Amino acid sequence: MAISNGLRPGLAMLIKQLGDELGPLGGRSFGLMPGQIDTDRLQWLHSQSGDFEATRQASEATIPMRRVGSPDEFGSVATFLLSPAAAYISGCVIPVDGGATRAL
Image: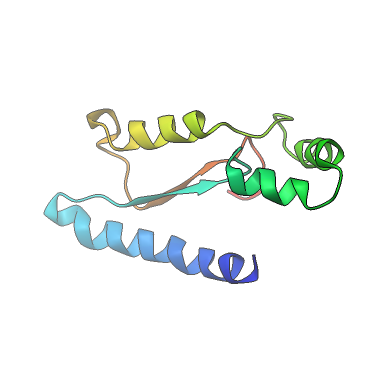
């Protein structure tokens, strides 16, 4: 996680910079910042504690929506961003995390 956590701020600024450079050419850039999405990896991480349910419940307690997200919920955001309905969105990172992000 250290490598991932270290790279995220730089990637966010790259997305912003690409938005600045691609916008005048008609291009867009954006990123999705997943929170806890119910993937095989998250299930594996929760299972490493020896008590999957207790770990899952403790994890969910840190999320304002009190649950992990589904892959379909994450995919729906991506689908929207790639659609014409999101044609004026660029240069930003969108959290898909059930409200867990504590920054503006």
